[in-house]
Image (cartoon, rainbow, N blue to C red; front, top):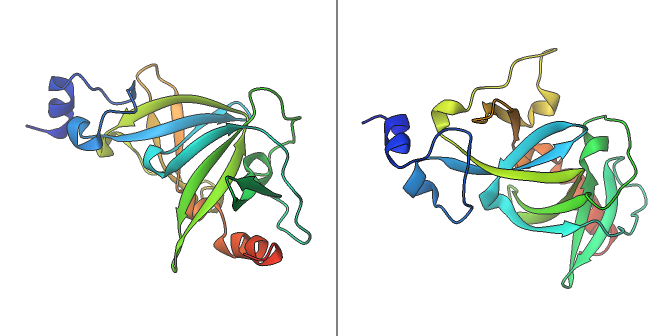
Length: 183
């Protein structure tokens, strides 16, 4: 039985909204938390998400990369915060009630790191099989710093750009912020 057939038999279709408590082994799919940034929908592996917080201010860090807003205190841990709009070269927008920080775990060469990503709003959780995730097109030679790992289409025909968290944020910039605040 093919993976798609197994998913259909289990009642899971590509791009369907899923219950985040469903496991990948049960559905044969990976789950992605999706969010909006400048009207486009992006997704990240839900297993990398630690929490979602409403926007609060970040403490600026001198000489940080332009997309690094600063740091925030997350229950005693100092966490770098990046603005995804700035990282992608999009126009700034005032933060509002829908603006959130998605706290994610990055895998580094030497250790894991926790980082907050500011986005316009959280959208849905979708499940996609590996077969449903298509490679990103080579537009202008690269797909936004090679941080787009794939593109998938939801059951209601929305396209979701799936991000590789480890390539989205330059670990050097995270380390520079941590050094600046003494961590």
